[in-house]
Length: 86
Image 1 (cartoon, rainbow, N blue to C red):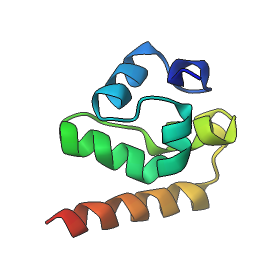
Image 2 (spheres, one colour):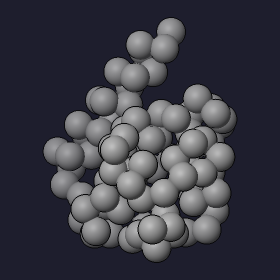
Image 3 (tube, rainbow, N blue to C red):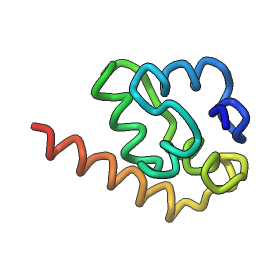
Image 4 (spheres, rainbow, N blue to C red):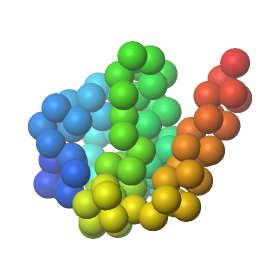
């Protein structure tokens, strides 16, 4: 399934994800939102990947329906991955 078929992911976000090696919905599910966003960050640190949008795509819901608790967890996971890289 194409990434742009998922909730929250439009053509531009799909392009950014594919360029970072997240080619499809299966790969996104394998990685999870934080790791997928981190792959994008590694490819292009200036590209902003919205964690809540990716998590919403995985859950099949709009990004604004992701709880504040889940958003905080995603941010924490993303920051951990960034720290590990240094």
